[in-house]
Amino acid sequence: MSDQDKISCEEVVAHLFDHLDGELDAKRRADIDRHLEECRGCCSRAEFERLIRQKIAALGSEPLPPTLQRRLMMLLDEF
Amino acid sequence: MNDRRAFFCSEIERLAARLYGSALRLTRNAADAEDLVAETVAKAWAAFPQLQDLQCFEKWIFRILANTFVSDRRRKREEPATREAEADCDQFSLYEQLHQPFLLWWSNPEQELINKLLREDLEQALAALPECYRTVVVLVEMHGHSYAEVAEILDVPVGTVRSRLSRARSLLQRALWEQAQAAGLWPMSPHKEHAGE
Image (cartoon, rainbow over all chains, first blue to last red):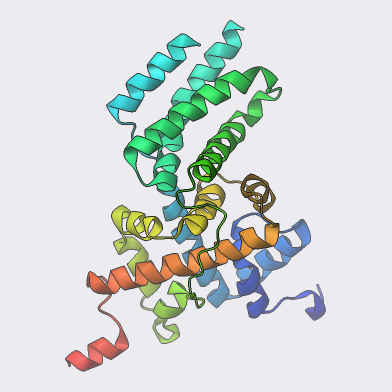
């Protein structure tokens, strides 16, 4: 890989969330992954954002209240 | 038919906690979230004969939930999901607030704060977001929709989804930072430490 193929820390930060959201094409994704393997600062930042994202995603699951449980059971029985 | 019905019921059972969780984040109200999940399940059953690829069930039903939420909000005109909140929002990065390169080898303030953040801290920060921002966070980070899919659901350009997400994350991280400071979770600011010495 030549130096021309390498991307800067600024580019990595600019595309970090696109990367975490799976929005990058294979080439750009590979460029960023390679940079993250070599750059401690960007790797640390990427890991931080990934963990925050993971914690936010975990809010998307909640135990069902009994009222909704009963409602869904009645609904499914009707189908 | 019985096989498909059994499949449908087992998938609802498997996904119910996630359907309710994201409905709760979208509506911020338990009664509305229950209605949204029940309406989603009823609509999904009615449309189920048209679903060819059963492997797409999960993505399909979360999309029904999102569409139902958005069209319900538009109908009620309570707080239009498509209207941009004109929040004056400078980009804010929690990482940049916390990161102290000179501590790199013997301390990790970023990790410390993440460990201290409680679920309720995150719930509070997410609930405080204007609806147009909260919606894109739920659709991308919880449902796993692509930007293009979110753009279609919300009927906005992909660029708008990207800019709303960026603002949402900035507002969310600022709220977490302010909450952490207010709760005394983050006393390690160099200024505070020095002031106290």
